[in-house]
Image (cartoon, rainbow, N blue to C red; front, side, top):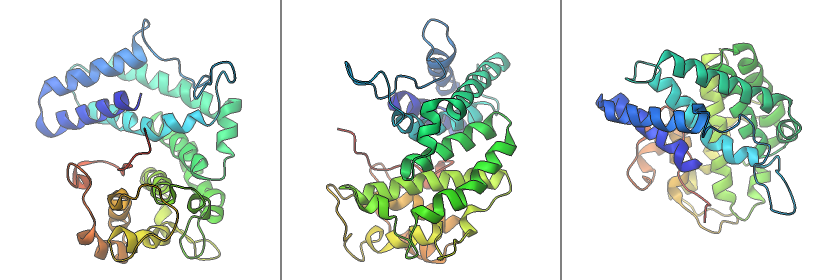
Length: 284
């Protein structure tokens, strides 16, 4: 699934930057096969995500496996919608209908409500997915409300006054999950720009905020200090995109750190992408 989603994103960007229609046509084919063709399309729900044979038909936590990648598909659709050859008005309409149906499931299903109530990165990614789909389908009121609610609902309880994320630090992959949660936040903040909300400037009653959370990562991200929390497989470059995002949002410490960042495999592609990505992986 993740490879399929990433391929539509990469192909759409390849068409956008090169103008080569072959990339657009392949992206069109992938999207139609996965979402639009009656013989092969996915149903607009995650009722059976993270199922375990003979134990669970599906679990709410499967939503994050989808949401961490699907916003790249939403970006790809927007890129193709700027005039990609072969991506027709009918395709755009059908894709919008699929997204609207999925948004309804995400809001109203028992799994969706359970994941939305999660207090860690699962909840952050849920909000990011909800806001992205709402904005993409024209429900700007829901998108704006979701971003606004994230201040007291997510940032206040999830980020400490020193910028640490205690629930993510408690994990055996604390560096990965600290950057992972911030990828969702930076994408949520990017959606906020489109609906008149600057999530980067928000500060909770204890001074907590997104810039402070990114700043907490800077010593390890720049190699100035070791990461002092549990981490089974430390990749310094995992923080690069969120540091870039904070720098672009006006964080002076993050801006000063950018030249000291470690480039991920394949090079630093921040300038070419529309949003932050998770640059490391815990996939086996």
